[in-house]
Length: 178
Image (cartoon, rainbow, N blue to C red; front, side):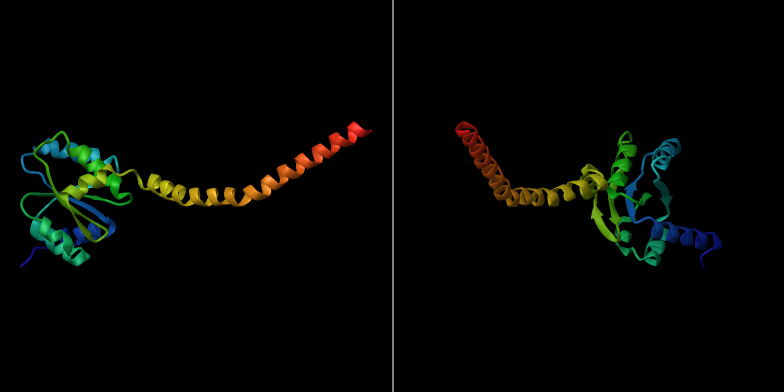
């Protein structure tokens, strides 16, 4: 029979999993309590929660939150970084926070209900921020459009230059005769 404390823990984890679409699962084996505290503080400053969880309770909570993709990652000592917002920023912040501690091994993660491998977390951390990617995308769309506008306006502009030259020549010819 599950105790009331375990039910509360599961309910709390369901809430956290539901409100944080980005989860990175890592093995924290070999870390001291002070080192875990340093990781938590570093991530907390960036709006990311780092929780050490019991696998059995986390599996139940993940199932209830609708992210069963996480359950294969929950083996051995488990720490989960939970963030919302820019996924690349969460991955980058987590990897920077655990970089000094060589014993931490990233197992993978869940992004908006999709499971990713540890190598994908590393790739994700190298991406620019979401705003930068959106700016690059908008620039990619705008560039051909501005080129097309320039190409379409070129004949009209060239006609204007030609008419101006004809008018200048007629004015010069009229001054020469008069």
